[in-house]
Amino acid sequence: MRQRSMVILTAVLTTGALTLTACGSRDDSGDSKGSKKTEIIIGVDAPLTGQNSATGLGIQGGVQIAVDDANKNNTVPGVTFKVKALDDKAIPASGQANATQLVQDDKVLGVVGPLNSGVATQMQQVFDTANLVEISPSNTAPELTQGKNWQTSKTRPFKTYFRTATTDALQGGFAADYAYNTLKKRKVYVVDDKQTYGAGLAKLFKAGFTKSGGKLAGEDHVNTGDTDFSALVTKIKNSKADLVYYGGQYDESEKLTKQLKDGGAKIPLFGGDGMFSDTYIQTAGKPSEGDLVTSVGQPVDSLASAADFIKKYKASGLKGDYGTYGGYSYDAATAIIKAIGAVVKDGKIPDGARAKIVAEVQKTKFDGIAGPVSFDEYGDTTNKQLTVYQVVDGKWKAVKSGTFNG
Image (cartoon, rainbow, N blue to C red; front, top):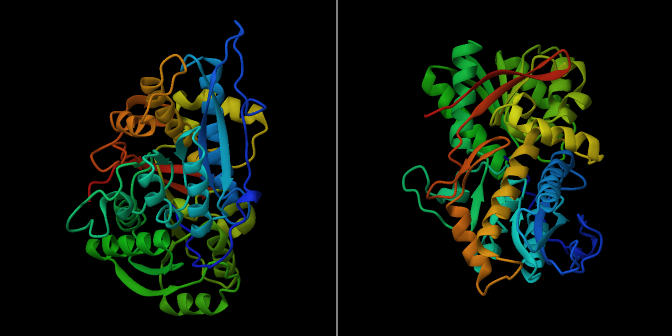
């Protein structure tokens, strides 16, 4: 995913950033023998309030549980991990300010996030300059790892950036194939929110659908924050489309689908992982029945490897939606923790630790709770699994899992 790119010139109040710590105070804590442990911080950047906050809080919660597990298991001897979570409100300028704040804290040796691809574009350079590793559990825009000309010439722009989510290059085609060959849809109306994630995903879906033989009934754009889609609903109805594909987030699509169905257009709305949230169903209500999304990986609730994580999440009182990216966030934090363990011995942080941790993350290979975790030469996950979900009886139900090779 994921992107909410609001081009706003604003003063960023970093003093309002939310911080979640795993172990009370920021002072070094003693172990059972009375010796001091070195405190190391795993940063988190995500929308913790406002737009997309349900998903952002799920990312924060996934990291928190990974840190709690590492501390309980003494995964890195001589080290106590804490979480420092900053709220970017899905605004790129806020993400950039948060990245600067995290870089300036010498206890921060790795960062998980952000949620949104548009926010990531403003953070990558900050982290790269400081040799601070960043792993996103949710960014799907291909250019983040493969450069602006990724379709013709792939070039990795930042060595410190990685992700545990696969890209829209696969997600868009996977959705198009399902729409044409499984749903047997032939005329699609494509809508996007004009943002990096939404517009990019819609473009890739459209290309895949028309290549398969489908027809474009029409296309349009909306603005983030829009609530009245009556004019768009009229266009869609008049187009005789049998499917609407939406590139964007659940904040707008949950309103669009309701107005679409209430307006008499009884056709499904199909979107990407930006729509994959329980909030979408809760807000849209019954009109969301039959709608579809694609999301990265397999359903975390169906994975035996994630059962303990889910149990802990539910028991912890943590807020947010763990089902979308919580598992990938846990695995991203675990990759950072394992890399730190290879660099930091007996609590002693060597010179150039951040750069050394980046190198260790590149070599990552382990079985995560959401699937195998390793990265290719671009920093992309080697796990290409994708899933189509449909709203059935008021809940997201996985209807197809697989991979897509283009």
